[in-house]
Image 1 (cartoon, rainbow, N blue to C red):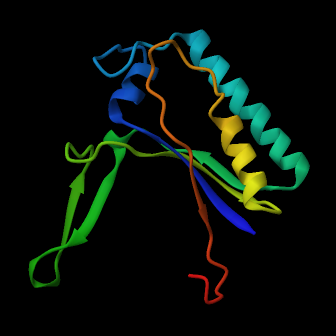
Image 2 (cartoon, one colour):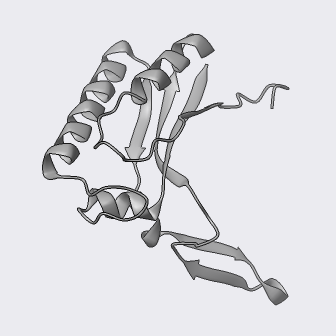
Length: 137
């Protein structure tokens, strides 16, 4: 079965990763960034080798987000981010093809082990089964 595995973050997290400490997170060093990328690279390589990786991407900071919504008279309303009313946003994802929910949960637990500086916020890893067109939607 295929699963969407998601990690979350905020604009403040992205700013901390750019070396700008804030009330939400300490500044990340270049070593912190390199450790995170090395961890994610190894994880992605393992998932590719096991045949479970379908896709996986990190997303750019929320400040580069664009929201397109319905407006009056059928005209779209376009707003650039970030959005102050939004707390956490999708920061990255994997589409995985795993034999079971237990297996994808093991992978999510591994994702939680990603190195980061002390005091940086942690977020749960979200697992969503991808509908296969059956009545399970």
